[in-house]
Every structure is written in C-alpha cells, then in structure tokens.
Image (cartoon, rainbow, N blue to C red):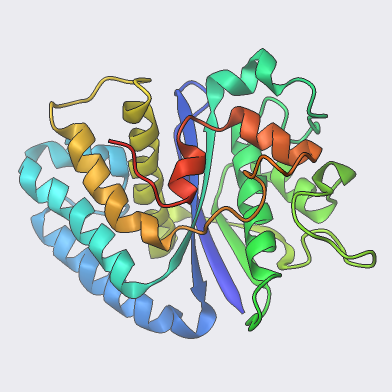
Length: 282
C-alpha cells in the first residue's frame, strides 16, 4: 500500500497554483516520521516562538515569527529539506496550473468537465490522482493501491472528492485503461482531508509546492524576486528535488489528444513539461 500526502501553494489570484504530492510506501513511513521529527526539532530550535506548522512563504520571506530568524538559517531549512528528500527517495508528484490560462481562451475546445473548469485547486488535485493512476498501474511490482491525503480545503475539497468518486468520461485516454477497468482504480475510495499541522509530510509538501510555484513564477517573469538571488536559490532547491519527480506519465505528451490531456497541457505554465523531463530552466 502507498500513501500520498498533498498540499498546495498559491490561489486563483496568484500567477501559478502548484500542488505537490509526496508518495511513500506504508512500510517506510515509520522511519520517515522518525527522521522528520528530528528535522522539525532542529527547526524549532532556531524559531523564537511556539512552532505548530511550517509554511514555505513565511519561512523564506521572514514573515510572522520568522522575521526574527537570520535569513541564512531560514534558507538552510529549504536546502536541507531538499537534500533530505533526495536521500530518503520518496517520489514526488507535481501539478501546476497557470491561473491566467485557466480563465483564458486557451481552455476552450477541450471539453472542460464542470469539476475542473475554472477551479485551479480541483484541477490540480484531480491531476495528482491521474498521475498516480498512470504511474502505478504500469509498475511491474505494484505494491498496492494508494491512499490520498490532502490538506483540507473546505470550499473545494467536496468537489474534488466527488470527481474522484465518480470519474467522468472526460478522463478517457489520459492513461491506458482496459475495457473492464474502472477509472482511478489505483486510488483507494477517494481523497481524505487532513489538517496540515497534524501531518508532517503534508507540511513538507507545502514547502515543496511553494518552491515549485516560485520556480515557475520567476522563470516565466510572472513575479518579481523578493531579493536579487532568489531565482538562483530556488533553482538550486529544484535541482535537488527534480530527480524524485514522477516523469511524464502520458498527459503532457503531445501525442495524447484526449480531452483531459489537451486541457491540462493548455493550462500548464511554461516549462512544466520540461521539468517533468528533469530539465531545470536557468
């Protein structure tokens, strides 16, 4: 059995919304939790207040209680976490939505299904599930289906759950599917909501989602850097993480002309397809 912990960075008002899932075999979770507990204790030792939750933007930009923590110490958290993920060898699923494209003319002509049309959060969550399905069903030594735990979003979470529980024909063709195979049969039931401050790996997913969001925004000049070297620092983190990314499982390949695949390609930020191939811009 596998478990995927998911969180997002960005809103419909930001240039890019990114969602990240950290995939782990259930048998390896105990060791991961033990190592993360030590990592969090180290972070708490430099934080002057009671630290309940890690938030990427607050740490990197020195917001809230982090404003009293030296910038180099704050950046080291991101660097160390990136290195740890590479060493721990948990896989990472990435979904990215360019919010301007989501509301623009480029989304027409793809048979946009009601659950995802105009809803970046639901679109990204469904895309995470599609990538898990495409990757896991093709594994020769599949270790079981996947539980999907997502940081709770009271407004959009029920819509995503319905989309996963009752998949529509709009998904046909995103991944190979047998005649008698049910859609998303690698996902156990539907998504399950979790409070981020109750789950360490969801908090890690938040930090990764923030790193990737800033990567797309800075690489595509959708946002200005907060300090002169921010782009170089973000790229350094991405280079450490990108070997753990799930590669293109079919949806981003131009040869895939099904409605859902062409829709997701139409709303992806520039450079998303290259990142899935391990190519970092800049």
